[in-house]
Amino acid sequence: MTEDVLGQANFFAFIFLFLWGLLIMLSHHNLIKKLMGMYLVQTSVILFVVSLSAKRGGTVAILLPDLTEPGAYLNPLPPALMLTAIVVGVATLGVSLALAVRLYRQYGTLEEGEIFRRIE
Image (cartoon, rainbow, N blue to C red; front, side, top):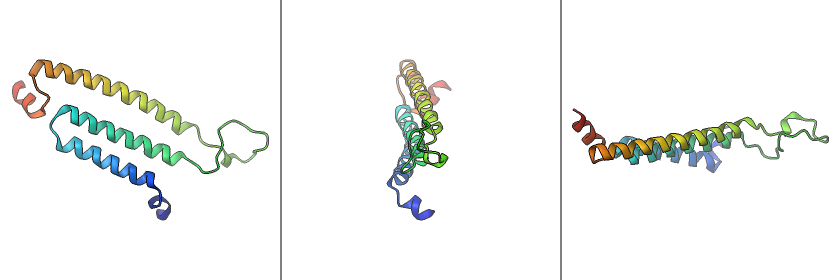
């Protein structure tokens, strides 16, 4: 099983994107950069779940008269859930960017430490 997982490029892409987004969120103090890192982490998780739900030789989840084996059909639930996750993620990013604009207008900066200093 580990040979199958390590042999697929999409898992390496997931690990790379996830760690890159996590590094951006932890190492930068600019709120916009933190949001970009958060979005990379979310995108990597969506890529991972969609990659896990893929099946070679599978067909859409519509009953066909010549296919009686349930294993031949693709599960429609993971792509539907990931579509919902994409919509929620875009909405969350939009609200976060609006809050960042408001913070910039209020404090004149998007640096996390500077905002905390001005609040105190």
